[in-house]
Amino acid sequence: MVEGEKIHDPKKAFSVKKSLKKVWHFLWEEESVASYVAFIVIAFVVLRFLFFPAVLLVTGYSDVAAVVSSSMHHDSLTEHTFYDWLEFNGFNRSEVESWPYLDGLNVGDVIAVKKVPPEDIHVGDIILFYSNRGQIIHRVVFIKKVGNDYYYTTKGDANPAVMSIEKEIPYDEVKGKLVARIPYLGWPKVIFSKIIPI
Image 1 (cartoon, rainbow, N blue to C red):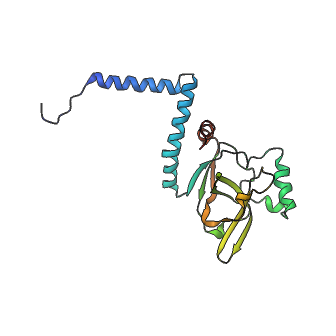
Image 2: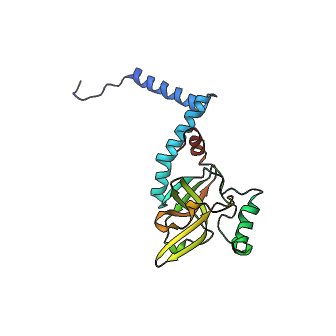
Image 3: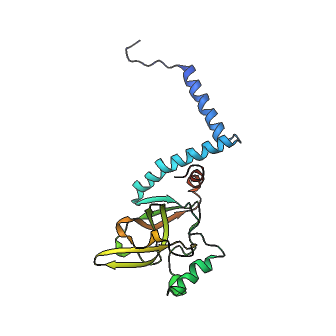
């Protein structure tokens, strides 16, 4: 035998193949709580550490996030928390109806945001920023400009009012403006965050 030459061991190859088949069966065919939990954990890890970074690299987006709260969800109460609130604060319905993503966002959606110049973020746009309470994906309702600096106030469409943490957010803290949405892809993160808050 030549030094450094590898010996093919059929028993070892068969053992690896058999192990992979067991894992595949466990994740895709077995009906157990353990298999569901394992699948969710693996899906979360793949999405978080492989898929999302690859999307950012290829597309030039500044961040990708899963919607984990219902603060942007539209339902029967949205007439009051969204349209009535906006009308009370001086917006007219025809102006509002030209806003993007007027149907809001659902828990489990994945959103992609892109960093744009501060003047390209308008009232009605949805932005992503991070606070001490985690990620916030809300709609811009007021913009304040002081010199060359921009500050944004946001509100969740389903929330009854603006929270203190979303008043006058400096442009530097804004990760980006919503440019794309994919339904359901974020459910692994939603479920994982219920098991282990992140």
